[in-house]
Length: 418
Image 1 (cartoon, one colour):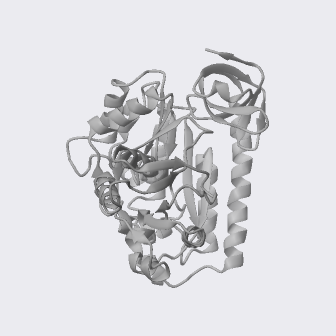
Image 2 (cartoon, rainbow, N blue to C red):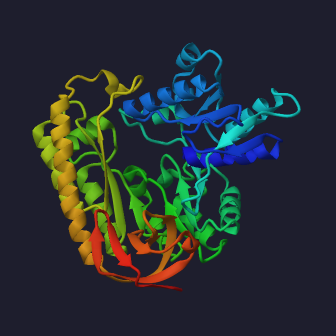
Image 3 (cartoon, rainbow, N blue to C red):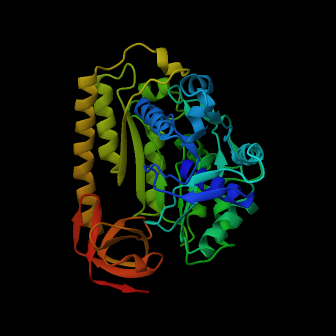
């Protein structure tokens, strides 16, 4: 989401006369005088990273402009630590546009020179479809920053997608705090209808990856969402965070579903798309999590066999219900439980990758790899490493895989451009 909004900010600033300069994120570019930092506050370690970055930019003599979630949650603390910094309201594309226009007007006719970090290693188009969410999770600070869901117009989304495709960015990443909640603020559209409309309106050679979907809202609209994934343009990739395998913990998290419902949802996805990639998240050490709760989470991981597992140790965020909850799990226990979940998933993924070896058609080459390699994605978003150069970015290949690395299949040099 932050990368997508930063790209939109660069476009807006360029259109109103600001000199936007490409720069490596960590450089101290001598040409740009202003840096706009889109911040994240999802966990405490990320927040610390944001504060360090603000300090680095201030010491480098840059005019610091802060947007994103930390700007919404802690504007007074930003002002206290960095009195010269400007805090922007970037919560949603309308607010972003108004704030940037005001920023440019406040700098005279010439406008400032700002830095933008492009993504030359990938050919993705990042398209936010909404901001905010409809959830009430007891641990989440992002919903406090972003507020209730606000869906963007279908016409604008399609325009953004087509613009990226015309630039050769053939992988489209639809982003949102909860993609499954798209249209819930409007009542007339949902994610499934959005996907069907997009597929009828864009270049069939592109590929679309749908971002995170809250299981609660996915369950409520699953048949329509699955119909939206039928089109070959859509990667069969489902990011549905379970967060815990314990019903009691899920209840304290206010997730709104139980483990049985989650398993049935995954079964429904795989019944329709047997080879679909499932990505899920778990929070280790939510307050009050017992050893039995943890074992239930491991059982859930083993049962659904996800292709991607994002493991986060519980991080209390100020202002959330869970911040003052008793029963915090000790640090050494968190580490041990995280290691157990990681080891289990590595074993599961190794088995799943071996089963997926074979012939893969119409794989999109999406990014530059290491040491003369490229990364391609098949229709299920399985990562496949091949030998080749960046001239392959955006092309489609047929490839045979005969080996696996840690998290990807190996195609070597045996591939053919479609």
